[in-house]
Amino acid sequence: MLEAVRSRLYRLGFNLFPAYRGTGGRVTYIAPDWSEARVKLPHSWRTRNGLGTTFGGSMYGAVDPFYVVMLSKRLGDAFVVWDKEAEIRFKRPGRDTLYARFTVTDAELEAIRTELATDGVDSVDRHYTVDLVDEEGTVHATVRKTVYVTTDRSKGA
Image (cartoon, rainbow, N blue to C red; front, side, top):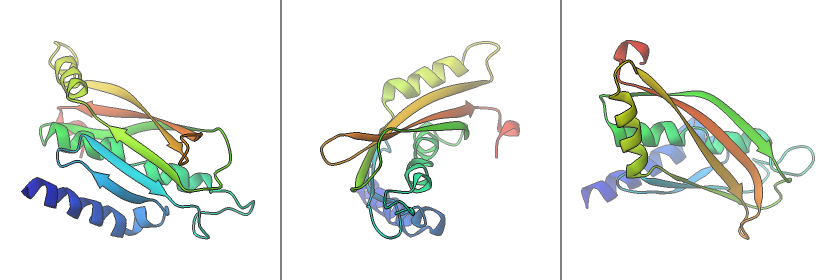
């Protein structure tokens, strides 16, 4: 029960944090164990560009922090997690509210831990893809993130 309250507070925090709020995105759900998060990006005067479609910066900004935050929360303090690179591919103009769903499975966490436990491996790069879709499921943009993970605190924060 406490975890569910805590995840709701994180959702509220995301939505009030000025840097995230400025994207126009809104976090609609965070699983208590951080295995899933969902975002909504309304098509409004705040997210519209000069052509009347959703601004690409809002699309990217709305999805930017999630894999790093989710991995940080799920792996714990013994790991350092950073964004390494990102790529966005626009597939069609956004003229409606867009949605994104992020997942980090237990199998993914185990794969990271196993790879980092291998002799000679001090960091790993993991690749994640998330689609921004409309209510019908039509993909408007695909974001591919590369996330760097290490257990060496001197290489991170």
